[in-house]
Image (cartoon, rainbow, N blue to C red):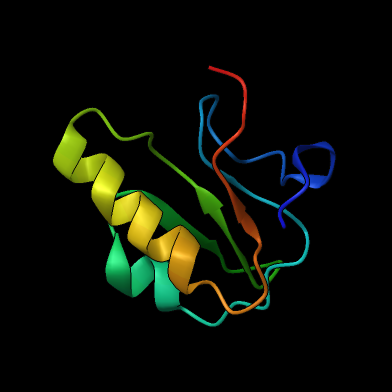
Length: 78
């Protein structure tokens, strides 16, 4: 389970975030490319935009549920 105290500083404020367990597998960026972005220098992903619609939130939840290391959280600060 993702830990919001360990989230990457690049995450934009809001419900979804990625923490330091990320293994840079690319699954979330393929699933919801409008919301997850790669930090090329660090080799990890962070949330670059928060969902604004129900459809957007579904894509982010699909990415969260598919994350192999549970690095995506949805209990961040709104």
